[in-house]
Length: 198
Length: 377
Image 1 (tube, rainbow over the protein chains, first blue to last red):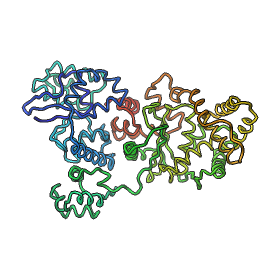
Image 2 (tube, rainbow over the protein chains, first blue to last red):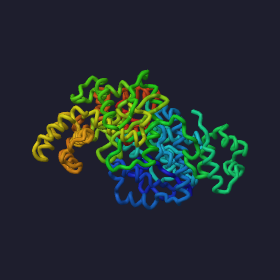
Image 3 (tube, rainbow over the protein chains, first blue to last red):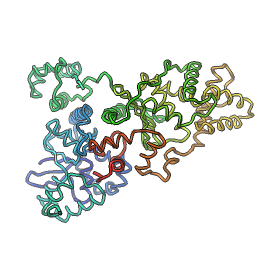
Image 4 (tube, rainbow over the protein chains, first blue to last red):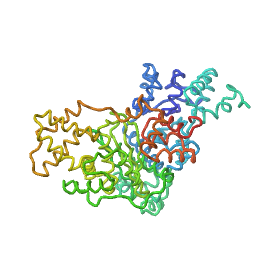
C-alpha cells in the first residue's frame, strides 16, 4: 500500500465528485488516499471555506474523513511538528525564493503536510507551487500536482472521462483552476479534452 | 542572512539520548567533522540536513537555529480576556519575515522619527509627554484629536497602516504591531471590525509603540501605550473640565450624562473619559467620582456603537476593491500600492497575501485578483 496524502485544497477539489475518495485502494501500487486532521481544522476555522464548500459537512463525507484520517502516535506527532517547524523556518529564512512565478511562501499548515513524508512513506498531493519549490529545496521526493493524481485515478478506472470533464467544469465555475490544472487539460488529459485549441 | 546552529540545544539533546557527535553524524548521514563544524558555528547545514537533524532529534527550528540579533518586534493589542500563546507569536513572526521583501517597494524611509525620551506612566510626566505631542500635532489642549492627525503621524514615522477585517470576535487581537528593526519600518495592523468608540484609542495605543520602539512587545510597553493613548485623547485640560462639571451634577445619572457627552464629542469610549477624570482626581488629591469601574463598564456595554467596518463599507462584507481604496484614501497608507507593485513585478501568488494579512485563502485570492488582475490563480 502507498499512502497518498491530500492537502486541503487538493481534497476540496475532488471530494465532492470522486466518491468514495479516501481509504480505497487503486492502481498497481495500491495507492490509498488520506488526509490529516488539519483539513478538518482548516475548514472549520474559515467561514469562507464553510460557505463555499457546504457539502464538506455532509455526514457521509465527514464519516469518511473520520474513518480514513491519519492517526499519529505521540512520537510521530513530535517528529512531524519538528519537521514542519524546520520547513517553515527555512521558508522564513528566504521567503523571496517562493515569491515568483505565481508561487507563495508555504504556510505552517502547508509545511505540516509536506513534513508528513518525513514520518511515513507517502506521496503528497498539492497544487501549491511554493510547496513544490520547498520540497525540491530539501530533497523531498514524491510530490504530485492534483492532475497527476487524477490521471492515476483515471488509469486505474476509479473515475472515467465524464467525471474528469465534470471536475474541470466545476473548477472553472468556481474560479479554482490553478495553473497546473490549466496546463494539464490539453496535455495530461489530451484524450479527454483534445489538443490545445488554436 | 548568516545563520548559526544552536549548538547548546543540540548538545543537550545528544546528552539526553546518551549520543556522541559521531553517532549523530552517522544517524544523519554526515561526517563527524562536518557536524563538528556546525556545532562550532563555522558552517551551517544545507536545508536537507537541517531537516534531517530535526527529525532525528525531534527538535524544532528555534531549537536548532540561533535567533537573529535584530529579530522583528511584535506587539499585540489583545481582545479582553484573550491570551497570547506561542502559536500567536510564531504566526506574527512568520508574517514579519514575509513582510521584509515588501519593504523594498515602500517609499523611501525618512531620516528622522519622533521618539519619546521618557515612557513614564507617572501622571505629571505622562501629561507633559502628551502635551508636547499635541503641540507637535498642532492641536490644542482641550481640542478633539481627530483621526486624520493620528494617521498623518503614523505616516511621518514610517509606520505603515494596514486596515484588516479580522472579525469582531473570531480573532484574538484587535491590532498588531510589527517592527522590522533592520529596515526601520513598522507595520500597524488595525482591525476595522471594532467598535467606533474604541478605534481611536487603539490607534493612539499603536502610536505610542511607534514613539517607543524599544518597549514594543514588553509588558512595560503595553502599560505605557494604554496610559499614553488615554492621556493623549483626553488630556488633563479636558479631564479638569469634566471633573468640575461632574462634581456639580446631581446624582449618578447626571454624572454619567456629563461623561457620555464628552465621550461622544471626542469619539472615544465612556471608560476612557472616566479613567482620565479618575487619574486627574487622584493626581490632584481630589475626591474621586462616585462611580465604579463596574458601573461604567455596564453602561458602556449597553450603549455600544457600530463597527468601524460597517460605517465604512455597509453593506458588509466589502469588496476587495473597497478595502484597497479605503486604505489609500482614508488611511493614506502605501501598503496596497507597494503590495500591488511587488505582486506584479515578482509574480507572487495569493498565498502570500493570505499570510501577510492573516486572512482566508478565498478572500486573499479576491484581493490578489483585485490588485493584479488576470486569472484568479
